[in-house]
Length: 210
Image 1 (cartoon, rainbow, N blue to C red):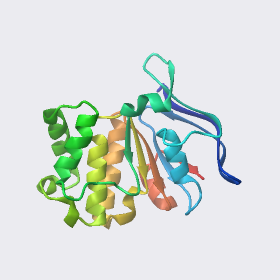
Image 2: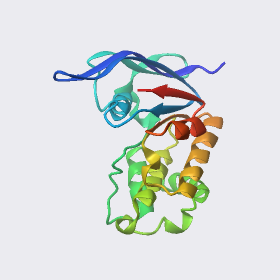
Image 3: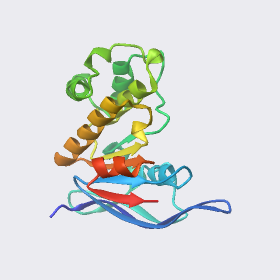
Image 4: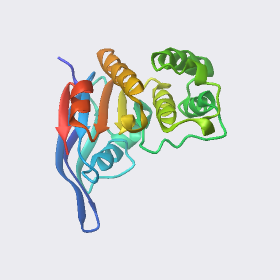
């Protein structure tokens, strides 16, 4: 039986008088791919920001469990996370590879390790010919695929994907979903945020609705 990797317990998040999340409880096991479904303002992005430690819960706890089952606060294990925010935050003057390399160095990954992993994953997304291009000319979909490669370059345990498919064409969206599912089979845990229930059903082995 797969062990729990990320535990969310009775998490509530308030912004002033606004309650963005209330009493969320969720266990993520190694290899889980969870489709997180909800409309605009439903709290999907808030939950993902809590899961990566950008927000602190008003109440409740988010913890990461290591191989020995010991609990760690999520902000102390950010190197175990790969995050693709809705706004990708790429440096437009840099190439796709330079963006990825910069992020990898921050995570103490050698250039050769990052390049080998990135090239393998880029082939799955039909992006290997674009790695040396400046991202300023990229479409939104290309930026999102670059951000996904950046998030994966340091081989994280957990992927947090915020509405990743929004700018992708049909073919690219299918390739991204297939890659996320394949990573799940390899033991990577993912939360895939989307507004589309059918998309969540395609990519996730379970669904959570906010």
